Image 1 (cartoon, helix red, strand yellow):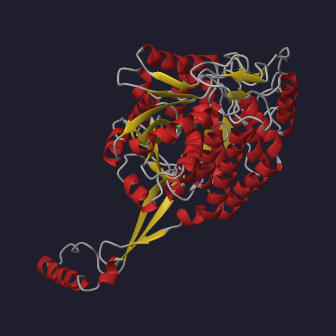
Image 2: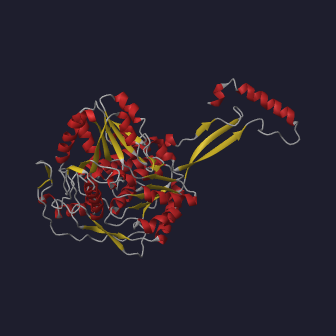
Image 3: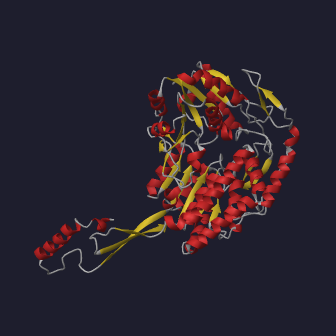
Length: 561
């Protein structure tokens, strides 16, 4: 099933973008990119990126009868292109093709799989410029955050290429009767893994999960969000160039509501990244089929500023933790608990640093933060802030859209006075909005940090690293960063990454992130004496002999290792 060439995008008229926009609450400004740096020129670069990545020539994709989906750039408002709106039968065909490819791939030696992943790593850096352009064009993020996607994907591919064979090697385990039973555990691939990836990190959250599944000997059917399908198609193109069978990773495009259930019903395991509400429904349907599911879901992530925190460093870290990718990041910080001893120094500095962020909607390195993904998401973020203000919260900076920069740009926003009756107190905003709370000490900070059904990421800032690590251990979150917002834990690729509570189940990264794409098989070989008395044997004598051996084993601890 091969898609016809992507339909050419329709260029939009040039947009006028003022260079600066003054925010209420101070004279500091958010500096947008100049009009000459964006608009049609960015569309030209985006189309060139598609050509350089081989996407505009068509790639392996189910061909459906449901029409087409228009994909629009948050940067320029122009049509990037159209992808097929696939249906259930198309998904089933894609899975069948992947199964055929997987039957060959599962027999490939580990060194062959590793070569493909390392070739993918090299291609990411060789094609860095067009990849950066495509990720920016399709998702709207600042280039520095697009670069994070490239780096993360390349590092993850390299990590599993180097460690996959070790993680999945056959393991000797203690047998039923030490010395008489030789037991080996093998990790067998599951078959076809379905991946439902989101729009906010369209490269990282598609490719990094896929490379782990592929290294484990599986095939992948990838369902990207309809807002960012072209980055997923670029992943397919890169893997094909890296030497993978074109059918080994299939991309199916269409609305999640239409394709999600069909995908779950056809694959052997599922990886989902998205909201907790959708994740619960996904897990329920997967559970009905008894297939494994891993899910990274929502978060309302806390940051704790201890009394001894170095203010300048903490402010820099908090700005990145709250506003990277315009807050459209599962591990982004939305709650900041500041010790009263440093409140009067930290808060004004945090406000100044937030106001100084450069918000822009154009390709290139000039912006610190890009626009939101869509008008619908902008409306959600704005509604959270408006509800809080109407109920008595105070906006320290931001709190408004920036239409002079982009139709979906929103100013980085800090609020105080947020109470439990406000929507953004407990619900995930998933935008450039953070709430500040004054606390009397560590105990109150930890209690409030844990007062959430979510448990994805957390951050602790302190001059005392040992105290920070101890405090981190008391926070209910899958990852806790000390003197870093999120990058230290996320970037520790050898360590597991995932959520507690409503933030998900399962882990990506590390040995956990590849073993989850396998099923364990135990092979036990019995030597000499059987484990059961042979028919017709003297049962009492057999039991006495076995008991004597087991008593002796009690004094031979090496047998249990």
